[in-house]
Image 1 (cartoon, rainbow, N blue to C red):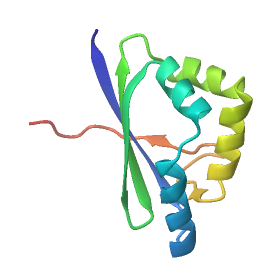
Image 2: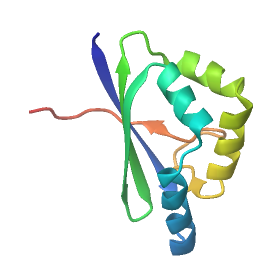
Image 3: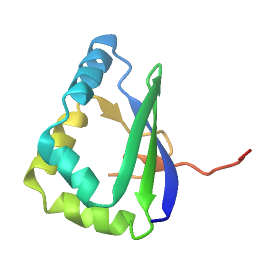
Amino acid sequence: MPIRRFCLTLDLVNDPKLITEYEEMHRQIWPEVLQSIKSSGIANMEIYRFEQRLMMIMEVVDSFSFEQKNQLDLNNEKVQEWERQMWKYQQALPTSQPGEKWMLMNKIFQL
């Protein structure tokens, strides 16, 4: 099964206490959220942090689409609850449009 990779970025609120809470939440992700991630075609997901900047790497199956993932999330009450909680810790990038969170990064180099 072919795998595609996407990198996305987002900022956290620059508050050490909130950043610690955010990381703790990600050590105990709700099972419904994990199931939603897997069932949407995401084969692997990693999140990295430098100060308040986050980078997410997603490896997805060939049939994955952001549009379909968005629709599944909108129809999943637990995912919506998780997203509302995460917004306490997250902040949009300065160039984001209203309602945008994770922003897709462009690959500029590959070895």
